Length: 325
Picture 1 (tube, rainbow, N blue to C red):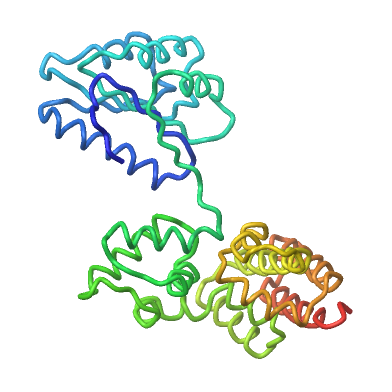
Picture 2 (cartoon, rainbow, N blue to C red):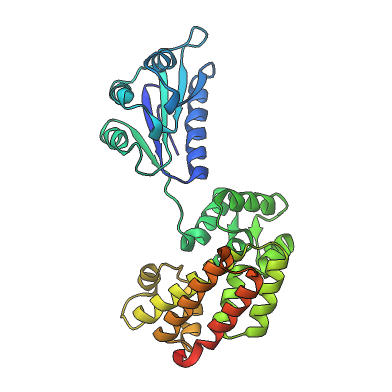
């Protein structure tokens, strides 16, 4: 984020994705300190604010000519302070850089809407959908002036998971040891080993392909290495839903990019879905999804042996292929 001027402005950092939020706040603070190295940085929690503490924080400091004021958890702002905060945005003090953080949700939406209409710099920190994660990885790698291809980005997501902080950390780890600024599939497999080879998504892929030996073997290894059972049912459900959407939409005469967007998957995933679709029909997908829902309830307390419940649902999914029996 590039800021031409920091003091005398207000920045609203809004959205649930903490990695983006933290980076946005850090960017503003860094820009402010580059502009005024002697500025003080004050962090406040909106729920604990009073008129006195707000005035004191935004009224300058005896020791610094300028100040950066960060107000976190804006959703908890007392209702009687909303006017004061909006006024600070509309009429900013020239020696104050104000940062307001709202982590999403409906709470505090009224003041959030007022701030959006005011003269505020908005940084949107929306969450990343699962199918967008490989693209996030590609962007994160490019941000570090390095390279990664889409297939390797997807492999890294399978290996590390959907948490953006973990993905960013994994990318840093890989690039710290890369001499050519390139992340390859071999590098990901070397660093993340079993997690890259055996994940809940790999189990789902084998199950939908009818590979019982591969699916059960990977499932047992995943469970033995600490993969949570709920992640397996989640991956199975996600794979089946994507396949069902593909079956419904594949006859539409649209570009691959538009088809992928309709289904909610990255374009490279269409080839996998097309291969899976040869052995599935809508009835089979619906029946398989029902069995996953049952297994999900079982691993969450309705059954005493989650491992057995997972093995049974994998076998059931495999049996639903073909004519949807």
